[in-house]
Image (cartoon, rainbow, N blue to C red; front, side, top):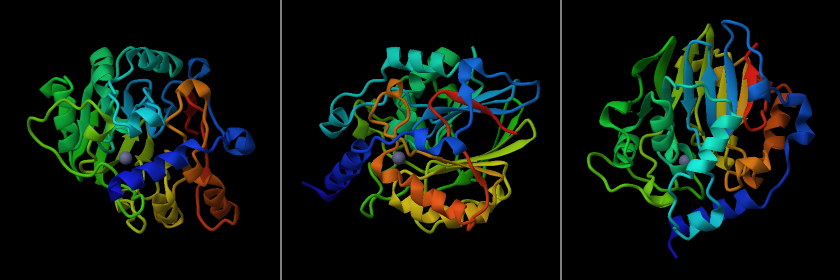
Length: 315
Ligand SMILES: [Zn+2]
């Protein structure tokens, strides 16, 4: 049994064993079920899609980041079972999250299955271009996304999606037992990905999204002592990946560095469980530890959490 497999097994077993929900943290929970949300003209909202997925809407423009509804169970992932996008489950998810008729653009932080697997189906249903790393583009094209809709993007590029200005930022992927899961980069013609392991990480990216007068930073995690880009300093909302110890150790310094108005720790749910079972923290999340930094006023930013498919209008 190889070291990567052991690392993955350990990570996965941690993700499964914990079941604490948001009820203990009600003071930090924002948003209402997406279908019930009332947004005034010009306001910007975030809808949480589970894992590190968000729908960002300004009324004029809709952008989705890392939407993943299929949420394959641990057994299928570990035993290398086939993982086609679950079309029925995706349709239920987008209904629950009250997706608009069209999505203007899709952003991908990295090409792992829990960030990119559902995109070929979603892009077909909702249109819009998908922006991802070279690896992500290769895998998405191999999954049937037309070349004109699968755009390769890299750090420091600027993208325009509707009325949103986006700056692509460099990022890192957090390590489990010192290793990045499913490592490697791909380019050109590749076989269609059939299993979780086929979705290689590629170049990790983060995004600064300027939309409707708000500045939103979004990433899905990062390596211990690598700070986010300085371009995202002073954002209104920083969505920070905290799936495992590596990114949690970086959290206090990264938040202090960015100095956001609001912080939304993300990728801390058990994504091997279906969306219909509601938000459950994974064991590796260690949200109490993150919260302790804020309670001690050691770092800036007001912490916010969201239930799946709830929408929050950014104040
Ligand atoms: Zn990943």
